Length: 227
Image (spheres, rainbow, N blue to C red):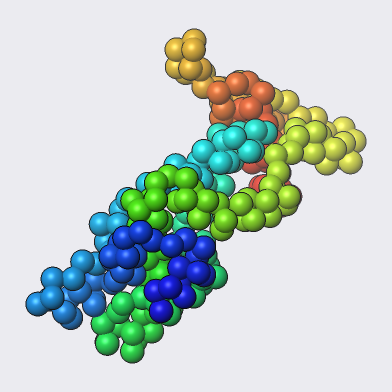
């Protein structure tokens, strides 16, 4: 069973106990207290960190046109419970989990919280067993296709130009970008802009440059307008 799972994830453990720990839910450990079995909650903690740095590093290097706010949203969408649950389903993770009798009977092997936690624990187990490179490869095998889907449909666009094109369809209407906030030292400035349609505020955005802040204001205006 273990070997079957290792073939499925394309990683073979030197320390099989680490894999078993990653696959062991606390309910199983509690059901077998006398055997002093380790469960995966500590590994889950470490796996969360490895997952976050791997995803952050990859999108920072491979999505150069995305501003900070978009990078943060993209990372959040990739490391959330919903995404991890889907990743876990791709490798039938629930089938290999050690769960208590009651937990398995009640559908624990298909519960998003249990599967997403176990997926993070598995990342940590690979990291401890083989180092950062195999852990990174494992994570990226799941997230890169999702990133490509995201950037194909939601790649950074010139929001200002898009907004201008929409407004131009209504002759006589005019948009202006107004600087309404500026903070931070010279080497780490942050700007806040509002975009006005005639005299009405239709969007607000911030950024580390005036251009980025204007783009984010235009993006918010487009969202509020349903685009």
